[in-house]
Amino acid sequence: MSERYDRHIRLSEIGEQGQRKLSQASVLLVGVGGLGSPIALYLAAAGVGRIGLVDGDEVSLSNLQRQVLYKESEVGKSKVMCAAARLGESNAHAVVDCYPFRLDEANAHELISRYDVIIDGCDNYETRYLIDKVCYELRKPYVYGSIGEFRGQVSVFHYGGAAGYVDLFPDKPETASVTSGVMGVVPGVVGTLQASEVIKIITGCGRVLSNRLLIVDLLGMDIRILDL
Picture 1 (cartoon, rainbow, N blue to C red):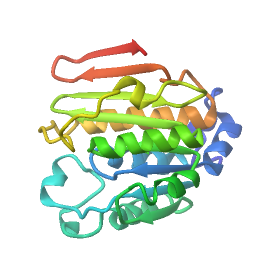
Picture 2 (cartoon, rainbow, N blue to C red):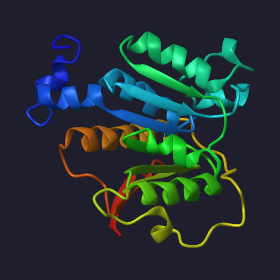
Picture 3 (cartoon, rainbow, N blue to C red):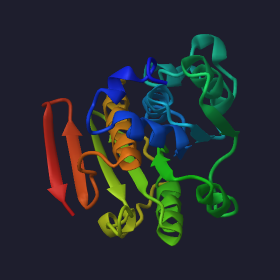
Picture 4 (tube, rainbow, N blue to C red):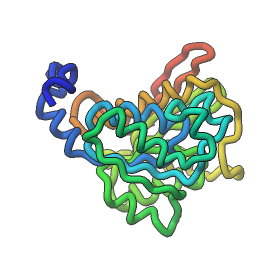
């Protein structure tokens, strides 16, 4: 551990104790696409001990512009199975749980209850409201991220009694999913910020984005943080 995670351990805010917390932690990533790719890669590399992956989709050619977990040779294969193989190559000590189906009302409570931190890598509103509801009921921190075109948002809900997704967006959109185009690097930036929030939550370092919303616009390189 000391050699692999040396650069973490050198940080006084993390140190050996924080690295140990990472190795003992479990996270559930809902959606292993554009956002989920950098989240999964960085959390596995950081030494998070157990990572659950929920996604019922297969790799498609149009994914590869932004979903850096996958290769052209994997088109048509299960995303979670391909992602698990890649994470195993990144860190052989990480335990990866594969759930090759969508999160829904029937399975959400059971799945979310198994993990310490829940991460939003999905692309539809219905799933976000479901994650928010169950995380509120189970008192689980919900690390939120969303993207569209050149912009993205990040926040942490239900952490230490903080506000939830439904408090920020009380009215469900009529459309089921986000269908706009997106510059390929946007989910990389937003997903990396989400991974950072997860590491802070687990190790207890820094100031978490609870009751705050970070908004980034890469077209104008503008970053704002709003109090909720």
